[in-house]
Image (cartoon, rainbow, N blue to C red):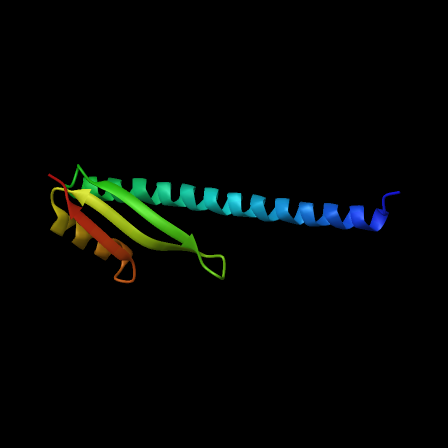
Length: 103
């Protein structure tokens, strides 16, 4: 005979694990979309300012208070100095900006 209380607790644990993995998947998808949108926006801003060849990569994370934070912005382009200045002006000094010269 199966003890109903054990079956119920196993299902409860499994449901909780599923909820956690769904929440993590949703978090990752939210970060991926937010980073993608910011990459497109920053590339467009750089193009409008005379840097047409910029490849932008954004890394984000979710803070303890559930806010989305920009961890790092990496840009590769021919005019690294100008891109770095434009990105700092746009995002502020708090954001870690890494600019590489692309030949």
